[in-house]
Image (cartoon, rainbow, N blue to C red; front, side):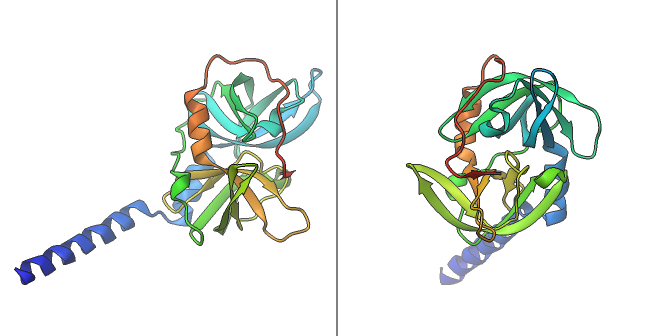
Length: 227
């Protein structure tokens, strides 16, 4: 009986190791998949003058997730896939979350969506990866670790060390399985790699509320220094 029990424990351990090996991806694999689904957002005034830029990523057919502060106080805009010149006009906003600085945009772009992970399962110390367009340098991929899970005004924020800068806002933060566990939102200026992301579970709830696209309108900015 003891021998049988030991064998079952051994086989279970082997299966767990296999499952972990299958789930985990190399940084190169994560970078390729994430960059394929990440976009550069260029926001404009009514006359077509550039107001700013940010990042976003595909969460469904024709749907791009980003930060609300990226599109607020703008009249229109377009997205570009990383490394490509084709422009896709933003047709409107299908859902917003002012408290969590999130927006979902409608864009005629049919690209495989990134998988959303469970941000409640994130652990301090695990490896994370950020993709975005810091300072306009499109398709920048950086690596770091999860530093802390914090609360600001009762809402959770993920603190991580993967470098981000202005222009990274709205880009995905991924775990070792290549799942989005956060959306880059802010940095503490004057600090070193004190970066923050909105947990992906807030985005999941917003996607469910996504409806008919409405014109871009003003929203509530983040309480931290925006990126």
